[in-house]
Length: 530
Image 1 (cartoon, helix red, strand yellow):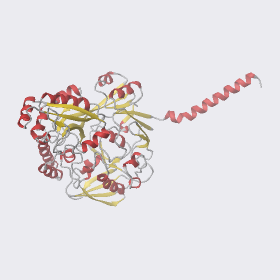
Image 2 (spheres, helix red, strand yellow):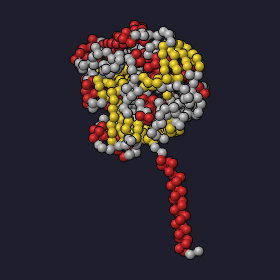
Image 3 (cartoon, one colour):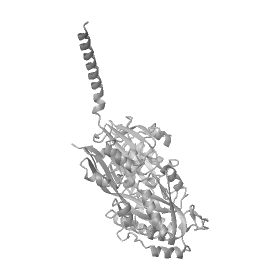
Image 4 (cartoon, one colour):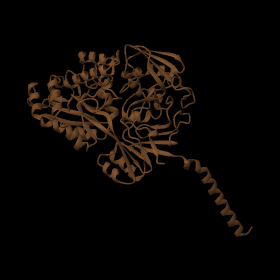
């Protein structure tokens, strides 16, 4: 064979190999992949372990709820097509037909019954969903697509509360532990995506669920990259390393807003950032006199001290300067304009002189020393806001030092009441009863109240008012009672509200994200520009 023929055959062979490689690569190359830079890693893949934003951002892409929430948080059909009261203490739910779990098994009412029984019994749950199912005494499966939820009395908010309870399968979940979900053995949902890999604190990889009943998402695959540093998230979006980020840095928002290569979407959020003063411990941990000696009594148990700490805070300054306009000052659970927001409850004004007088009246004319404990990776603005609050408290004589720690350690320690004051966020699905039951009602395992009560606050009179409000069927009368309960909780300084967050997302050109009042991120709301 001549050298020319050999060269021609070699070129032909290389061309054939290149063509084969191109053909083999085409399906992967044609796949649409959404890469998201997410601000905080989830506590677990178990959808009932923690109702924080980071966990919901992962789990609500995999699992679904009976009632869904539209971007404005109004109710919509989810796994249930309809629901109605079937008596004063019964709700009937009709389920969506032909729904399958990601492993191909059918979804039925029995899976809902299993889920409701599981929710209050997840060991070591750091933010339990027990309060959302507290009123359910019995689940009656009528047929595979019909169930009756029997309650301990009227439960008008139940459909709203169930909008945050993810449904898991009995066949995968029975006997499964939280670790089985983390290891993906039990992570079988009905949602638009299937979890294919999960590296705690680092990443998660999802692919489209071809069995999903809903409209086909724009994405074949979704890649989560957990980037707790706000600057790193911005840098990843700017460099093209990710397509979408949540919680863009307040310093970078102006750049993303004005650059033609990016889009910013936002919505008034429902998350309240607040402080929880420890009223449980007889001797408050982390509190001393000015010489460093532990105080004999817990000052947080004195309402005057809690009032002083609240009056020392300039909420407008926090919202406008520290948060750079990405929050609204708050004096109650819900922002303005929503059902059960009480316009008669003011945002507390900063009154440092009044705060000092209250401290003196409580027996602390020279103040005291304490720590303000904050999670370093829950929200990027929390540590900065905590430093500002600490300075305001120091000015009234309460010498305050901020201590940061990872959320994985912070959550359990706060639940054990190991801090004098902790900083948290809580988002309601649409009514003040939700935080009233979970955040300020007395912790009661039998009644499933106070599941996220991080202050140890307990007020039997308020508990009775909350219970009465939650059992009132008339919307107007129920709102009035919830307003009364909210007013009582704020007057007693059960918690110290700071501000309501505005939710932001930033995307690269060619992708838009539909902003929502809830602050978790759902890949189905990210769409390629047509």
